[in-house]
Image 1 (cartoon, one colour):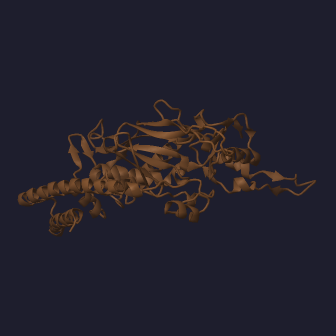
Image 2: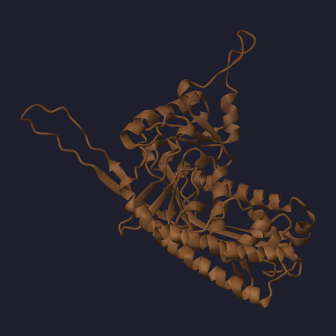
Image 3: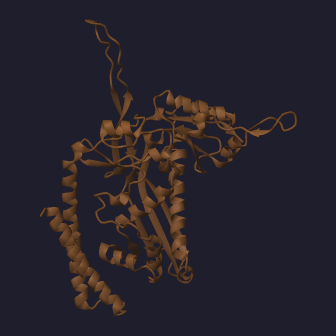
Length: 440
């Protein structure tokens, strides 16, 4: 039996004993353990944490042994079959979002440390560095439970907190980092930029440097005994620098106690707000304290003073991306401007028939990413798996609750503070094109 299997079996037995103690507690309808049970539960939790640490190390060693078999998807493969033949897995780009889901890639930094690269469909919560998973947990129920001590319909969430080592501080409660990853995953699923194909890099430090190609080799036809024209394959650096993205929310404890949908309402509100901010930063961030959004990145070619939008503008932008050997699969556009584009007609309805003007085929093949995260004066067209978020987990992300901070105690309120750190960059600026100076 392998060491991994032995530890997994041992972990299962520890978890079974902890679950048995919790089942007894619930069956007896007691609010707390006896002294003997409490000591035993803490011992089991310490054993569980130790076992998880050992498993994490073994998982990492096993993954590194498989690095030679890992491949990065060929973004220029035209069909799934071509990619399977060349790389052993599907994932060719043909201009549609559904074909942008790439298998995970494992890169190494200059120190030989593993950098995990996730496609939009893969979860941060499943990363080896996170260890234990919080998959499927309803963190809205955790918020309400911690604030009100009401855990009706949230037994799994309560047991998770008891087993995962969340920290009770003098000012409140900090949940384990895997729950922070779960919250981010829910927000990632609602981000239009990530749904379009943006990848996610795990940042294990505040700065992550990823190589980018800045020059292409050139092949030329050469005669016998003739000198081959020399060209150079050049690289630069993309540097992700962790920036803070935070929210401080105050909620009424009375409302959370009385409203049956409080957990869903809180969770949806926080996730939607986080997803919207990730999109706004990726598209229109100003740099410095913010991400540098694609629409403001002057390294990306732009057409200025577009005026009233026409399908031809989007067509020309897509062609410009294609001329750089990329396949534009989507464009980010404000809902108002998308409305202006789709209301174009031919004829005046009097002298000639008035018909809707459809987009040209190249534009029709792309997906419109309608979002208020981009201003109504700009549009970004591109191949969206050529941009990426860097997410700093561990020390970079935390979720905390307090009902004593500020005036929360006096007002019977709970404050929720959610902090994440990360960055956003285009991996190849030539995979995108900007339209600016648009008027409504």
